[in-house]
Length: 99
Image 1 (cartoon, rainbow, N blue to C red):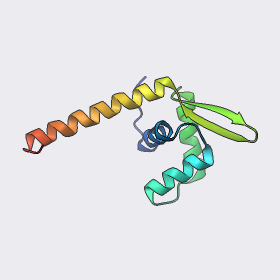
Image 2 (spheres, rainbow, N blue to C red; image 1 turned 180 degrees about the vertical axis):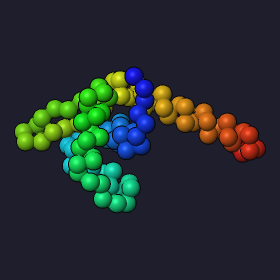
Image 3 (cartoon, helix red, strand yellow; image 1 turned 120 degrees about the horizontal axis):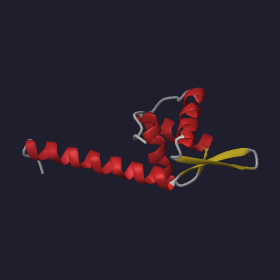
Image 4 (cartoon, rainbow, N blue to C red; image 1 turned 90 degrees about the vertical axis):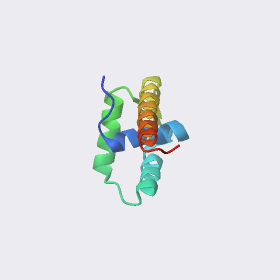
C-alpha cells in the first residue's frame, strides 16, 4: 500500500496521532483551525472514508457519533513519512550549509 498522496488525509492522520480518537466534527474543527479556512463536509468525510477503507484509520460509533482513531498501520505509515520528510530537509540544509 502506498502512502497517501493527499495532504488533507496526511493531516487527518497527524491530528489523530497527536490527539487520539476524535469525533468527526472535532477532527474537522481542528483541521479548519490549522488551515484557517472552512473545510467542506463532503470533502472531509470523503477523506475520512478513504482512510478507513485503506485501513489507516478506524471508525467506531459512540452513541450517535462516529469516532475516528489512527490504526497501527496508519501510525507506522505516518512515522515513515515523517522520517522521509526530516531526512530530506536535513539533506537540503547540509547542501545549503545550514545546521
